Image (cartoon, rainbow, N blue to C red):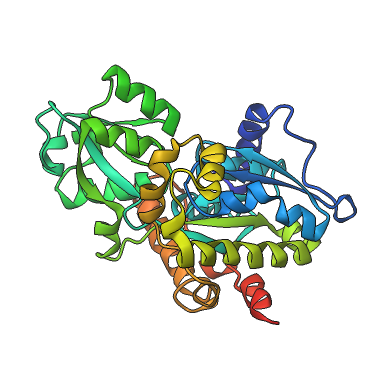
Length: 338
């Protein structure tokens, strides 16, 4: 029988095995240091990371550590090796369902069309129904995985009708090049490359319009939220400023701009691909973050809906009694104050 204790122990063991040498656990308040787990999404936060402004304004040492998927980030947080991190809504929903002591406090992006289901040209796949009998690569317990399973179900296909492989984005890129997979549901920068030799069958935005919205968020352990409240309020203000700058002057974020150079540096994306990748996302403003649409209620509803789907697929054993307990608008509210 899977219990919360055994599940947490297993997650911690997995994370500790994969994070050898990363650190000795979450920082104490006196240390003024944080470990932040980030992924390769092409979003304005990378410009903030490059600027070092969070460190300058708070006197905090931030260790930025790159992870391949939100599931990896959640495991690291369960082990105590990471304080704050980026994760897709599917992995956050899974973490909440397992009762992990974390909270979502910022919506990094509304995924929209930034994740897509792409089939390799020459495979005879022209629609989602044509995926029957084919091999698909996707990171398990990710927003893309959640959307893929919904897409298959809507097309009348079950898990046994296709071969689904659990792959991190770099593994998807390699498998695509070798011809080992027929399709993938993934995000940039890998998405940008596979589209060059593939056909887009569907986008996350298509399913969001049907009530299956997905997003990337920033979560922190309860301990980090308590110990570093002032630092994280400043972080939220800086995140909002980075998003606002893109909203105001995004047209000037070209392949030769410092903003695009920063995003390319931190994500590994080609500078030429960054502007289009950025344009596929939507970035909620600070007032929107704190509103009922997002941290004020909508995000919790989305997590619950996602968790219900994950349970149906056998990805989580039980549902949490209240997904609102894993979301807080407190930091966005504080950042709104003068």
